[in-house]
Length: 208
Image (cartoon, rainbow, N blue to C red; front, top):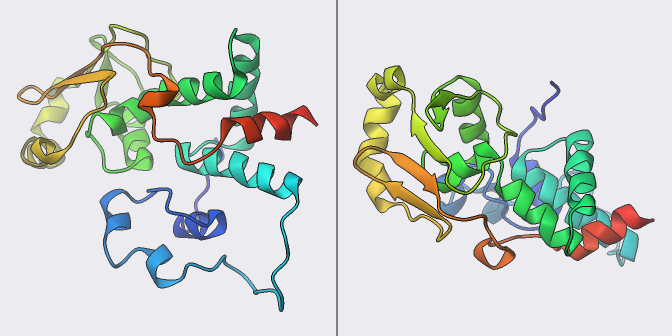
């Protein structure tokens, strides 16, 4: 499947804020947003006011960049959110948070969502005791996320055992730090998620 392979720091600069695409590096002085906060490319001679359509597009792109999803798959998530009862923007956010790669990231098993996606694709993660290599798989309440037994002997896992203590976990998840086993206590709510984009603007973008 196609995947964005260029410098992800350009995406943060294009969005105008840190999207934490490189994990802890984004909190250091090496962060590109701290060095060059202007958007990539040639700068206009004068500042132009963004239209409502441009602002809606920016919010949609922020969501895509944050979760590392291409347009076609993002549209599928949006269509699924529309079919559910309730507020479409909030439904979309909850669906994105339920992705397995995002849950692996939220549990602290990876420093970024792209790293979490790689862990899942390489078969290191178990979902309810079964190996799952599909990052877009949606977790449910009561699901457990653990490591494949052979993966616990890797150098990465050994380092993670020491660094996991300093990582916090959201309230809708629980983590057994000794065995590195996570569990979904409940489905996330919009209040549980620190979203960097507005779901309402995304709905307005696709409503045209």
